[in-house]
Image 1 (cartoon, rainbow over the protein chains, first blue to last red):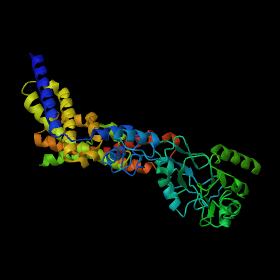
Image 2: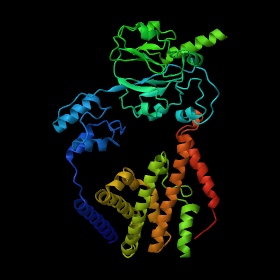
Image 3: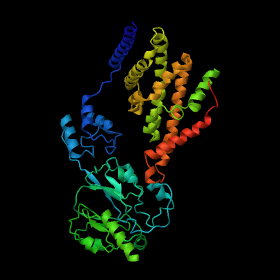
Image 4: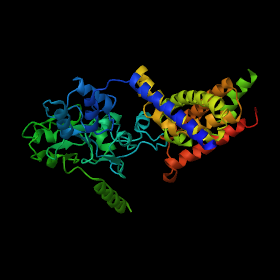
Length: 284
Length: 193
């Protein structure tokens, strides 16, 4: 008898709740466009915000309503744009997937420090404290705000005190570039070709060479040697226009502190560590 | 009135659900990473706990007790909480999309929050009246929110601190939770029901 009561009671309660939920679901139904769900499925789902919307769901809604463009998802790249365009029956424009590039090669062995910083481990805080602990007030502080910002695990802090970008994992969303308080990271069109001045310092030549072995000292040697006139001086810093650069490499040969590198030959962490070992062997 | 006030004080501080009773440790550690999510979770918990306790109390006293089925309370309460969370989600989605988006994933997550279950069970075990049970649920959920928000505040600062590799992440979080619990031990014995 007891069992029957128990079964009946639970059964009835369960049934009532079920019915109630069913009715509520019908009564409070929200009309959703099935296309929004379908578009959301195609997105990477990292909610990085590179498209300018709060998350992938918001972007999906915006695309379906025609507010955003089908190629708005930067991390998703061409594949995602095509998939979304297919779903919505629209044409894809081209979407360029940029890549994060670190414009500083002044690792902890090639630069000098003003003082020993022992505060909060954050680039923003470290940079604001007496203008940063590095003698160069434009260089990378190495506390990895960019690393913390990356949602794709594509950037890590190397042992040499500079961030290392994994170009295969980088989706070009630009979160790291926004996170860097010194704007050292810039988003560039993907590719190996073209040369870059890997320095961010707008200081005069003399103070740069005091602070860093490899900083741009604004000697203008590269500007003079460039046959395409692709290099201009912007406030004591040489800047190469990648669109004009023909990959001849004359600027890199001429650069006295060797700040200019081809994009596929940017100094690696291993090279920096080897340099450090050599240096310490010399001094010993 | 006096009893209600002491219930509020006791279940926010003295018998804090997370730090003294150790209920709901999973969300306490899981969503205390950022202040924003901690506040979202807290709001959702206050909401669900209060409604769940109200319904379970009524169900217990008007159905389970008269039919001598009190041994079914756990399974009934699970049923109630699960469907209630679902209901709240459906209604909220229609009525207030902003709040729905704000609470986000935390709403369904509450189904598995043992603190909600504990409040429902304790409310009947302590033989509270309906009003007392609801006040108890509100106090307990505020206690939960308090612990969660304090934890989130500490963890946000810890993120920026330098610490040895072995301590980083979960290790230091657990140590913090332990110290926090010890701190709340200071309220012990201040008030009893």
